[in-house]
Image 1 (tube, rainbow, N blue to C red):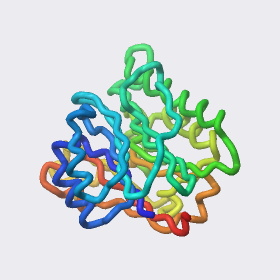
Image 2 (image 1 turned 90 degrees about the horizontal axis):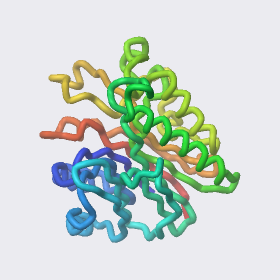
Image 3 (image 1 turned 180 degrees about the vertical axis):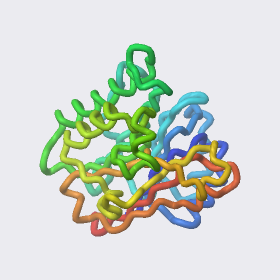
Image 4 (image 1 turned 60 degrees about the vertical axis):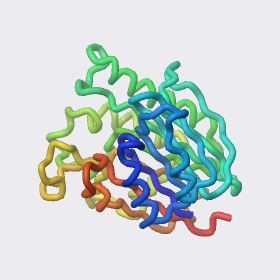
Length: 265
């Protein structure tokens, strides 16, 4: 089973990119974030043409939005209204093999890492706290869960281009890293990306549009993640960040993350 997570930064603006990526990589499941389109205007026909016969979408105009497209059958799973907001940041489905898949788009948090002056940062920390509580309540050794998405936190020192310079920059501040560690511990998650590329090797999935040559400067951060519960760790086969997609004309600032699983009957 080939699983992809990608913050596409507007599915309609990047539809040709999605089509090109799918043709080249043939994912079985495609999880998108920041689709930025209402459900009734989502380009579903294009995804059916790509071979995705099953879908779950949750979108809104111009902001946020998540979607799951699959060649494998699934049914919708339990979700919730995070922080009391219906801002389309989470979808969950259960595959026929019993694996429960969660697709998240965690709030970015604005520019100032201070909850007293920045409501967006307060929202982000509240959202992450609710994630910790929710997965802690549902914890079980037998759970077969996959959590993917743009979690908007680069937790390790080598998940950013310069640890010291980014300690006060939203996405790598100590308080955000602490909140992510709590989510990670809530269900003994396994970091699938770091399973294949262990520290201290640098690992990035996002590069700012500000860089004239993103490859040359390589001022990246790992904001996109794939986690699995311990029951699925033996099934991890391969991982790749598809850097070429970041080179395409008018790309998303995120590159797709591909994870392959074996023997998931």
